[in-house]
Length: 470
Ligand code: NAD
Image (cartoon, rainbow, N blue to C red):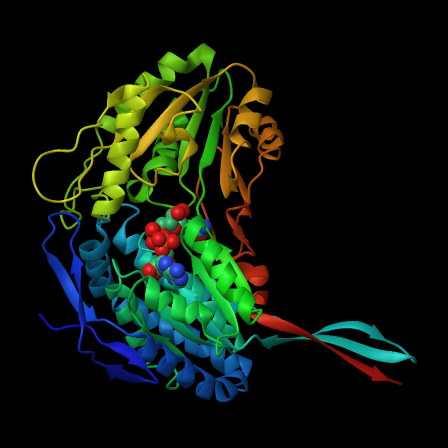
């Protein structure tokens, strides 16, 4: 099995140490890649800095055109990238899985190419002409998690490259392969040093986030690591975008006809086996229809095929890694011990691999860990409420606030309640639906700053006011 190399300064860099990447379906070897040291980080940052002036002064239209070419190159390599994602991360080829992720990466790249940040004229009279310009922030350090490795890499790298920044990205050591291949492909189109990739865990990540040669950090991952990244950024006052964990609540309004909403509700909870930052992770159901909703939702969930992501009928793959699987099993055990009812799923099948069945848990309370912690797995707690005001208060009671949703027959009434949720995106009759032109980010401990659209692009720039006296 040939090992994937790092790409630094436009060149493939092999290393003495290698990382084994495990296939979560059966724990076989999914692939092998070069493992970077902190010296590789230094080298990559140096190359990114050397490439910065040339790339920042490249005409805007040329940078946009190169992103369009990159989108097409991602599409030409769709099958290979999708296979790598299934092998290293587990999500299936079918449904909203690995092919959906690659198509999303191409779509987001093309959408980012179309964004513009024109100069703004603030004043133009006989006193002064004042214009606001956006300049690239400089060298960007990107650190990504394991749940949507290619898409999140795309969200970090493309806007940076679009505005004239250069990048060093470090993917999760659990899922580095698709990102290594993406950066290799991008180097077929971009000048050397514009995008560089290193691999490794916390030590290599910390070297990048601490590095004095990095001007901005974009980090997606857990709240705990986000705090460390923010501390690192403080040393040289780096700009910062943090996309952190969430524990999104959904509220089903009393009397809602669930049938037409079931499919959306299912994917809102279980997309990527629940391992999605803005998946629905706690569902509040009015007491008047609690029993009926539990039964109907559990019946829907029970017929969804879970298994090997390479098989075309599979719609949900395994949990991505052992650590996550053990965490989920612990949360289910604690809920059961505190009196919750496992309506479907709940028991890991024997044998190797990290498959965990889709699980619906009823009679949950806010004190259970499966409700108050981000479970990040194929497990859905259903919680009773009495009044809508109480449900909103409980939805808002946590330190995180990424997304939230309200479900009901009257979308306008549902939207009024959704507006009271403390979160970056409030959905009505859907959950987790995102779009490259709509800013996405968290409030409270779910993050700082936004990604996507013009607002997301601005995060890779600094403002310069040019003030010319008349
Ligand atoms: P994690 O925080 O454990 O790791 C994320 C990345 O940080 C990895 O690449 C890791 O190697 C690196 N890292 C670890 N320690 C570091 C350190 N001290 N300095 C620098 N880098 C370090 O997160 P994870 O387990 O990979 O991902 C799951 C989490 O990500 C969940 O909480 C999820 O909600 C969150 N997430 C958020 C979003 C969002 O957009 N808000 C999107 C996806 C995932």
